[in-house]
Image 1 (cartoon, helix red, strand yellow):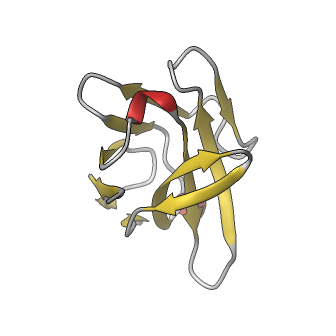
Image 2: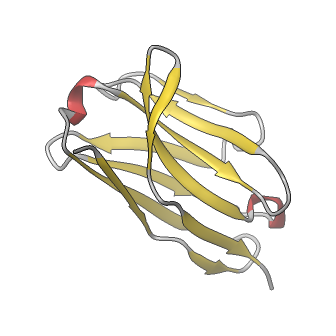
Length: 117
């Protein structure tokens, strides 16, 4: 069955960096676009970034453009999100999700990212 398992979250000071990982299994990872989506406390889901199946094209929300980098290693079935210059507004649970015909059809369990001094 499809599984997406995020890791790498934690507590970081403003201005710091974190790298999130999402280990995928149960499907042909290299055939799917993948995304990161986050949910801040008390708020709805916010799309963060997406990447083509071969990694050639990436998209970012304006709120993270220039600070976050999405990437993937299809040989390792793993999706990444490098987050730099972190702000308190980046505090959220971060989910990786599989994209299929414009919809997210599978989600991971999420990893907590907290930005605080």
